Length: 328
Image (cartoon, rainbow, N blue to C red; front, side, top):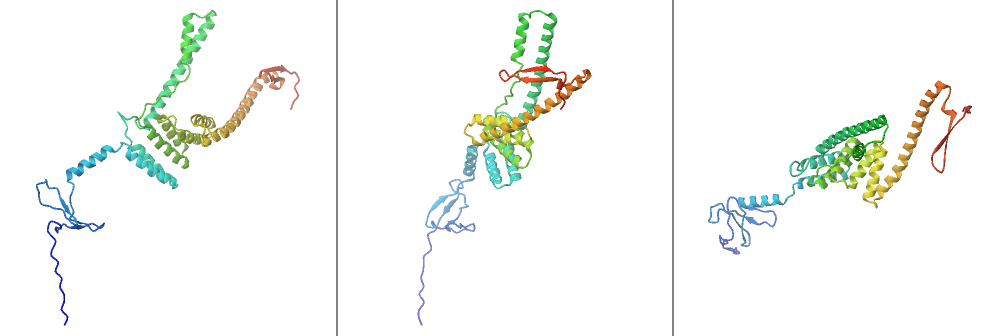
């Protein structure tokens, strides 16, 4: 019979490996982590013994808490909003416009507001509405005072006094409409992006009125944001408001002269606006002609009895009367 050979391996020193009931295996590298549970002079900090004789200490609960608090300090108050914006961008690129809308809305909602930061979008829209109402009332009062001053002068039939001139000058200075100046938000440029991005989803969803509101807020937060101008321009055009659409396109070109999209919009919208004005002029002239004929008909006349000829040099018109006009 052959004798069996037996090999004896001495056990490793206890300083290298300690097996306990809580011994775990890490799937990466198969390191053996054994956390000491006994109280030690180092304040209960766990000691990790690794294969190969390496020794490291497990961070205490206080240390982990301190590191977590430091990480939070490094985070911006809108870090979560930025993360949600990126989620919205990904959904938008995938064509999931409703999901993108939800993410942009969440990004807007988690931003800080109030004292030290600034107003919400809804608050900005309400402030502007109240300002516009006060401005309308002010202009009505200015016009009333000017009309009263003119009546006073006509009844006096004399040269107005100096103080009357000054009163009129003061009214003239304030006669034009004032522009609403919204309060700043600490993260205005970031918020402007969230609102403009949400407006882009609203355009795809056919909710043009809401898209205009979001672009309004975006531009109150960042008046030079060209993307918001172009998206509002699109929303205006789709609601057949070519006048305001053209204004936004021209403003975009003013801010970015090299923006090809804005320049094409100006060319196209200018043509549409010219056609609209020409059609409006024809409709207005037709209504005026009908009104004039209804009045002149009481005297056996019509507008056909009058010929208006434009002077090519001055642009003015000369009107002649024709007793027997040719009937068309």
